[in-house]
View 1 (tube, chains in turn orange, green):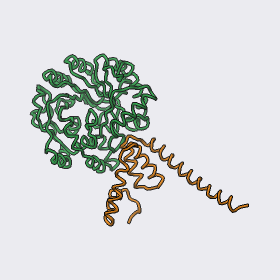
View 2 (cartoon, helix red, strand yellow):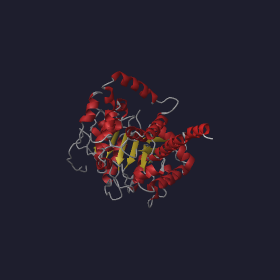
View 3 (spheres, helix red, strand yellow):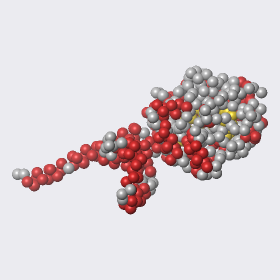
View 4 (cartoon, chains in turn purple, red):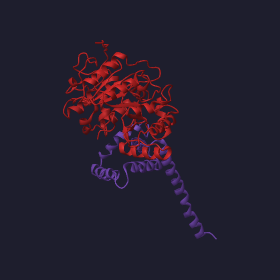
Length: 110
Length: 330
């Protein structure tokens, strides 16, 4: 194995059905409709996908959702705003966990 | 009759598109010609990175007088061909551009001018908006994106600002306001991906250009980048051609076939040869069954029912929502 992540892997995502076809099928029945336009547009859902991919640090998903976003008429300017929104929320989440430390400190310290 | 030079080029691959076509009727047949599209030359004040014509300031190909006259004569002989579509290059740089427009309008033909906007700032073109308005031309203006960064990356630094100024000028003479002077915008993707949904980008363009610049327009056309000429070179330089072809092929949509522009249009090159579309023209895939395949003395009615020549670049017109000089097809 040359590398753990390779952009050519993306085309083999469907291979994951090989060892668990029923579970794969159930996943696709969930994933497909979840990204269909509803009250949210396709573009809004693609942007959510991009932000989650970014925050989850999944290179396959960042690749896929960047290309999908471009095909939705978005540009790197839009994606830069989305990635900063995602990154700042991640920073906020990290900070927010500090409240647990605050609470523990209040509980056990004099 | 003026002789048309013969050219022998290696035929482009066609197996992939034809395999799809075989599953949906087997061949493309043209209907009657309702649009005569004339490419009056490859000279352009811009050199866009996606250009399928390889147009630019250094190109010297210009439609000669005899071909201009033959085009107008063919148009006059065919009243059912109700539209003249003038393209280039920047067609306004042709020395007889205004005469072509006047004569087509005098024949009562709807006349579309494919306009790159920035040509308005070229010497001698300052009154172009007034001329187009006086002739009641339909203007199809190129603006790939409502953001400056994306537009300038495709069309050159500073093009967005110049384009905005040109759109403001067109609005000022009455274009795009819904009062008969039609201003449509055209967007090609800024890279190797399919265009967004036409309605979505049109809505965003309208909102952004309206709020930021007070610009109004009628419709937005999305056009897929064709894997030929300069865009094909760009794909090759970035080792993206195979993936792009796969993207086009994977998005094949048979619902686009009835509306393909080659069914109702014939394209004339600067030197008078005939093609099923502007893209075939750039690949030197001349019309089948016309000897010689040229505009000289042509009765456009003879082209009805012809078999359209196809190759794998046709996947660009059948991908997703489809693509044509009039935008999406579905």
